[in-house]
Length: 208
Ligand SMILES: Nc1ncnc2c1ncn2[C@@H]1O[C@H](COP(=O)(O)OP(=O)(O)O)[C@@H](O)[C@H]1O
Ligand SMILES: [Mg+2]
Image (tube, rainbow, N blue to C red; front, side, top):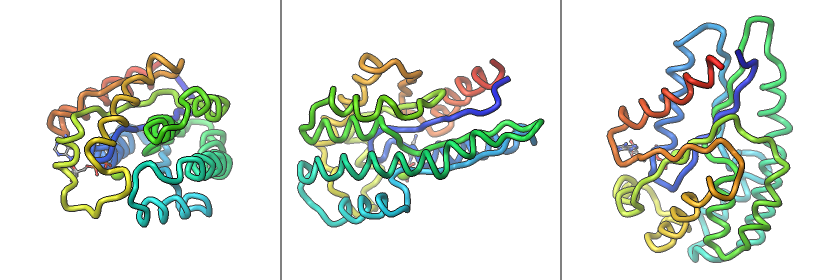
């Protein structure tokens, strides 16, 4: 049995990440008392993450600020790992298993900033030394269907169909580019069906 587990849920906007993160949290929390769970997200609300959030809200052109964003995303991730994720995974008690569930991680940086025109290899090399998740789920569906789900939200700079198509195709290339344990999950199904696929994979790891 593993002492700690780092789970990432990633994918394009509207793919269902936040819903799945909540369901996974609830499932693990009630599955056994030994599980302590930290549910968290990127960008964070720390000093770098807050700057990213402002830029995503205020800027309009999807291609702009690629280098600045990359720099901030890396700093935000390093801070997130150092102050929240790694300490939580390290401090399991005697009969406890600590689990981090993170909404977005470096898969987003690679997929989004590649779509902004930055070099994919360089993006990978900037993230490769950071802690690897035990498992990463990439929720996948047609960008048009994803946008349909989030019509009520205020649009952020990357939420435009043509740009999202590029991001989706970048996400789908990741299993071929990284050695990470990545599962591409068909998210064009009901939330319960999507969650069932994820639960199966997580249960497999938990008994390892
Ligand atoms: N599988 C699904 N089928 C139908 N609607 C979904 C599904 N997954 C998520 N939604 C809905 O789509 C919207 C976006 O989901 P959300 O989890 O916020 O996506 P993300 O965090 O990836 O942007 C929400 O209103 C959510 O309830
Ligand atoms: Mg979300």
